[in-house]
Length: 180
Image 1 (tube, rainbow, N blue to C red):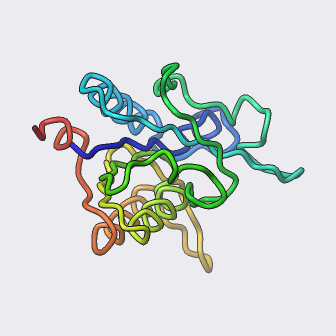
Image 2: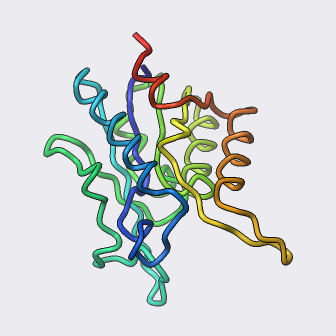
Image 3: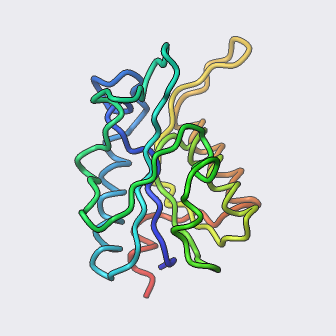
Protein backbone atom coordinates (compact mmCIF):
# COMPACT_ATOMS: atom_id res chain seq x y z
CA UNK A 1 0.00 0.00 0.00
CA UNK A 2 1.27 3.53 -0.68
CA UNK A 3 2.76 5.53 2.20
CA UNK A 4 0.10 8.21 2.77
CA UNK A 5 -3.67 8.29 2.38
CA UNK A 6 -5.23 11.58 1.31
CA UNK A 7 -9.01 11.74 1.67
CA UNK A 8 -10.37 14.70 -0.27
CA UNK A 9 -13.60 16.55 0.50
CA UNK A 10 -15.77 13.71 1.78
CA UNK A 11 -18.13 16.33 3.14
CA UNK A 12 -21.81 16.38 4.03
CA UNK A 13 -22.96 18.66 1.20
CA UNK A 14 -22.14 15.89 -1.29
CA UNK A 15 -24.61 13.45 0.29
CA UNK A 16 -28.42 13.22 0.02
CA UNK A 17 -29.92 16.21 1.81
CA UNK A 18 -26.79 18.27 1.16
CA UNK A 19 -26.52 21.28 -1.11
CA UNK A 20 -24.75 19.44 -3.98
CA UNK A 21 -25.38 15.69 -3.78
CA UNK A 22 -23.24 13.53 -6.02
CA UNK A 23 -24.06 10.21 -7.66
CA UNK A 24 -23.21 7.36 -5.29
CA UNK A 25 -21.54 9.23 -2.43
CA UNK A 26 -22.63 6.66 0.17
CA UNK A 27 -20.92 3.79 -1.65
CA UNK A 28 -17.78 5.88 -2.17
CA UNK A 29 -17.70 6.88 1.51
CA UNK A 30 -18.13 3.26 2.55
CA UNK A 31 -15.12 2.24 0.42
CA UNK A 32 -13.13 5.24 1.69
CA UNK A 33 -13.91 4.21 5.28
CA UNK A 34 -12.60 0.69 4.58
CA UNK A 35 -9.42 2.15 3.12
CA UNK A 36 -9.08 4.51 6.07
CA UNK A 37 -9.43 1.56 8.45
CA UNK A 38 -6.70 -0.34 6.64
CA UNK A 39 -4.30 2.61 6.81
CA UNK A 40 -5.05 3.07 10.51
CA UNK A 41 -4.57 -0.66 11.20
CA UNK A 42 -1.15 -0.52 9.53
CA UNK A 43 -0.12 2.69 11.30
CA UNK A 44 0.25 4.59 8.02
CA UNK A 45 -0.27 8.36 7.77
CA UNK A 46 -3.67 9.77 6.87
CA UNK A 47 -4.43 13.32 5.78
CA UNK A 48 -8.01 14.61 5.52
CA UNK A 49 -8.66 17.50 3.16
CA UNK A 50 -11.79 19.61 3.42
CA UNK A 51 -12.93 22.35 1.08
CA UNK A 52 -14.29 25.62 2.41
CA UNK A 53 -15.88 28.05 -0.01
CA UNK A 54 -15.26 31.60 1.14
CA UNK A 55 -17.47 33.33 -1.42
CA UNK A 56 -20.56 35.01 0.07
CA UNK A 57 -22.77 33.31 -2.53
CA UNK A 58 -21.19 29.84 -2.24
CA UNK A 59 -23.72 27.25 -3.36
CA UNK A 60 -22.18 24.48 -1.26
CA UNK A 61 -19.30 23.76 1.13
CA UNK A 62 -19.73 27.25 2.57
CA UNK A 63 -17.47 28.05 5.51
CA UNK A 64 -19.15 27.46 8.85
CA UNK A 65 -22.02 25.35 7.52
CA UNK A 66 -22.92 21.78 8.43
CA UNK A 67 -22.49 20.83 4.78
CA UNK A 68 -18.80 21.77 4.92
CA UNK A 69 -18.15 19.28 7.74
CA UNK A 70 -16.41 16.00 6.98
CA UNK A 71 -18.77 13.04 6.74
CA UNK A 72 -18.89 10.92 9.92
CA UNK A 73 -17.95 7.75 7.97
CA UNK A 74 -14.42 9.14 7.55
CA UNK A 75 -14.13 11.43 10.57
CA UNK A 76 -10.51 12.19 11.42
CA UNK A 77 -8.92 10.64 14.48
CA UNK A 78 -7.34 13.05 16.95
CA UNK A 79 -3.83 12.40 15.62
CA UNK A 80 -4.72 12.77 11.93
CA UNK A 81 -4.00 15.93 9.98
CA UNK A 82 -6.83 18.00 8.49
CA UNK A 83 -5.94 20.44 5.72
CA UNK A 84 -8.46 23.11 4.76
CA UNK A 85 -8.37 24.32 1.18
CA UNK A 86 -10.15 26.96 -0.88
CA UNK A 87 -9.25 25.72 -4.38
CA UNK A 88 -9.81 22.40 -6.17
CA UNK A 89 -6.07 21.58 -6.01
CA UNK A 90 -5.34 20.58 -2.40
CA UNK A 91 -1.71 21.70 -2.79
CA UNK A 92 -2.58 25.26 -3.84
CA UNK A 93 -2.18 27.74 -0.97
CA UNK A 94 -2.19 24.99 1.69
CA UNK A 95 0.45 23.25 3.82
CA UNK A 96 -0.39 19.80 2.39
CA UNK A 97 3.04 19.25 0.85
CA UNK A 98 4.71 20.10 4.17
CA UNK A 99 2.96 17.10 5.74
CA UNK A 100 4.31 14.66 3.14
CA UNK A 101 7.66 12.94 3.41
CA UNK A 102 9.96 13.43 0.45
CA UNK A 103 9.37 10.67 -2.08
CA UNK A 104 6.07 9.60 -0.51
CA UNK A 105 3.72 7.55 -2.57
CA UNK A 106 0.12 8.62 -2.17
CA UNK A 107 -3.27 7.00 -2.36
CA UNK A 108 -6.08 9.45 -3.02
CA UNK A 109 -9.83 9.03 -2.58
CA UNK A 110 -12.71 11.45 -2.27
CA UNK A 111 -15.02 13.86 -3.94
CA UNK A 112 -15.46 15.05 -6.65
CA UNK A 113 -13.66 12.77 -9.08
CA UNK A 114 -14.13 15.41 -11.77
CA UNK A 115 -12.88 18.38 -9.78
CA UNK A 116 -10.83 18.24 -6.57
CA UNK A 117 -9.64 14.64 -6.92
CA UNK A 118 -8.58 15.33 -10.50
CA UNK A 119 -6.85 18.64 -9.69
CA UNK A 120 -5.02 17.24 -6.67
CA UNK A 121 -3.87 14.05 -8.38
CA UNK A 122 -2.51 15.97 -11.36
CA UNK A 123 -0.71 18.42 -9.06
CA UNK A 124 0.75 15.59 -6.95
CA UNK A 125 2.05 13.90 -10.08
CA UNK A 126 3.52 17.18 -11.34
CA UNK A 127 5.27 17.56 -7.97
CA UNK A 128 6.88 14.14 -8.40
CA UNK A 129 4.72 11.99 -6.14
CA UNK A 130 3.73 8.49 -7.17
CA UNK A 131 -0.08 8.48 -6.98
CA UNK A 132 -2.70 5.76 -6.79
CA UNK A 133 -6.39 6.65 -6.95
CA UNK A 134 -8.85 4.40 -5.13
CA UNK A 135 -11.44 4.69 -7.88
CA UNK A 136 -14.33 3.08 -6.01
CA UNK A 137 -13.78 5.47 -3.08
CA UNK A 138 -14.55 8.51 -5.23
CA UNK A 139 -17.79 10.01 -6.53
CA UNK A 140 -18.80 12.52 -9.21
CA UNK A 141 -21.87 14.58 -10.15
CA UNK A 142 -24.05 14.53 -13.21
CA UNK A 143 -22.76 17.28 -15.51
CA UNK A 144 -23.95 19.08 -18.61
CA UNK A 145 -22.06 20.61 -21.50
CA UNK A 146 -23.47 22.26 -24.60
CA UNK A 147 -26.88 20.73 -23.97
CA UNK A 148 -25.53 17.23 -23.46
CA UNK A 149 -26.18 15.65 -20.07
CA UNK A 150 -23.36 13.43 -18.84
CA UNK A 151 -24.38 10.96 -16.14
CA UNK A 152 -22.29 10.88 -12.96
CA UNK A 153 -21.00 7.34 -13.52
CA UNK A 154 -19.80 8.38 -16.99
CA UNK A 155 -18.15 11.53 -15.60
CA UNK A 156 -16.48 9.39 -12.93
CA UNK A 157 -15.26 6.79 -15.45
CA UNK A 158 -13.96 9.40 -17.89
CA UNK A 159 -11.93 11.21 -15.24
CA UNK A 160 -10.51 7.97 -13.82
CA UNK A 161 -9.59 6.86 -17.33
CA UNK A 162 -7.82 10.15 -17.97
CA UNK A 163 -5.96 10.07 -14.67
CA UNK A 164 -5.01 6.45 -15.20
CA UNK A 165 -3.58 7.19 -18.62
CA UNK A 166 -0.82 9.49 -17.39
CA UNK A 167 -1.06 10.70 -13.80
CA UNK A 168 -1.86 7.81 -11.50
CA UNK A 169 -2.52 4.15 -11.12
CA UNK A 170 -6.25 3.54 -10.58
CA UNK A 171 -7.16 0.62 -8.33
CA UNK A 172 -10.03 -0.54 -6.16
CA UNK A 173 -10.00 -0.38 -2.39
CA UNK A 174 -9.98 -4.18 -2.20
CA UNK A 175 -6.91 -4.31 -4.45
CA UNK A 176 -5.16 -1.76 -2.25
CA UNK A 177 -6.06 -3.49 0.99
CA UNK A 178 -4.91 -6.90 -0.31
CA UNK A 179 -1.53 -5.51 -1.37
CA UNK A 180 1.10 -6.62 1.17
